[in-house]
Length: 448
Image 1: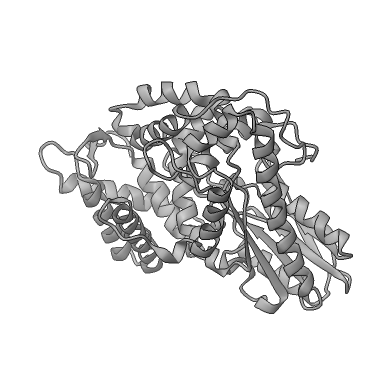
Image 2 (image 1 turned 45 degrees about the vertical axis):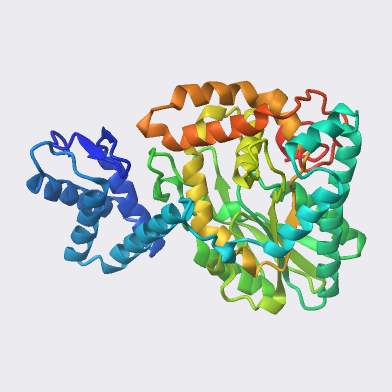
């Protein structure tokens, strides 16, 4: 809509920022996608109605509060008989509100989303190895024990993979598929390769299924608030087709797998054939392997679900535990710069959106995993200090007092703070070429 009187929006913090109607359109479309709709024209028309309503009820300064805009979206959706979309929008709004509460210092910890038993095990391991704080990590590095720290960390990770493989092997007679899931940059690709090696050594035959080929055409994807296409949400995938194919494969039937061309953002149906032999198990590496709708018609007896996360248990100099999401943020920055020529600044600016999708579509389902693997390496922090610390220092300064980049500033400040107190190491020669960390810093013996 052109010539709109809406120029600014008041955020919850009280800061005024420029109004952007495309964010309303994207929010409506995302809600529609969540309930099976994919008509962008309808989303645009409804967005125009929201703007018109806001203008007709605008105060003199014509800078509505974000809550007023969301109220208007709900009103327009309901009045125009889009009840399902309205419900999806309302639920998403409530989830965001709960997360804001959870982020406050007065909130209780949501225990359902935290793998306490695994964390306790990892913390015990860290204490036993003198790696529960950055100060103790520094002490060992100064003593010349970096190679030893690498060996200890890699051994713990490999033992996790071996345990997962043993558990899968025990159920081999009934299993039809194994899912390896986890949030962005948790190390799924390397872990899947290592898990496959372990299972092959036990005599199991696995067949990989790449669910990325089930993406909808790019033009049908929902967008994030910056207008970028969102590949993080499970609704970007044709969940019904995936589930249908998994059921057929489980029955020993042949299916025609689609092919997705990422260069042009188009999916080609029935591209290649796939059928499982009686002794073969399907291996699926996916962000959304635990998402219920992906395999809703597959019996739990026929699937084994592995969840992977860098569950590092280490406190910074401020006495606070280093956040796993910050480790994954750095990992993704380094990986994208090495393999995808992607600017780390863009990763930082968009990370809050990645995190939001994880909190909605990945983290809530980790309790359904049959086994959790820890990919966190205490030794990765000094390597990051040497590689990217200065960038975080600059970002912290640049984004300070920028109302449009509050999240980027908070993350830059937090990462800069814990990296600053750590020893810096450029030499990564002690890191094995098949390490999960090589997936992000380069030099891996695996092909990605």
